Image 1 (cartoon, rainbow, N blue to C red):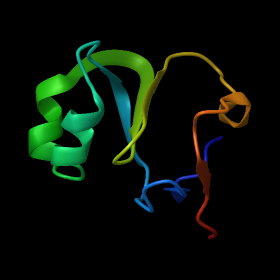
Image 2: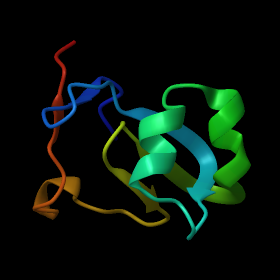
Image 3: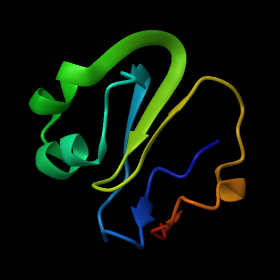
Image 4: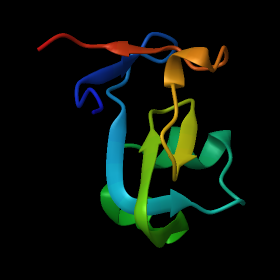
Length: 83
């Protein structure tokens, strides 16, 4: 299970998640900074992958295709935004 209310403490943005997608390898900081949260613009670098999930805020992004503990990633500053 994943929290669907994640928030980034670095950029103070809601973390968006997209089921069955991963981010293209060419994604970079400026892409997300300029295009979040516009789904129509983000789709340009989304790749369909069954069972995967793409996460992004305005300063960080991850593609997950297996069970992963996000809290172990020291670079991420994503916390539960409370329910």
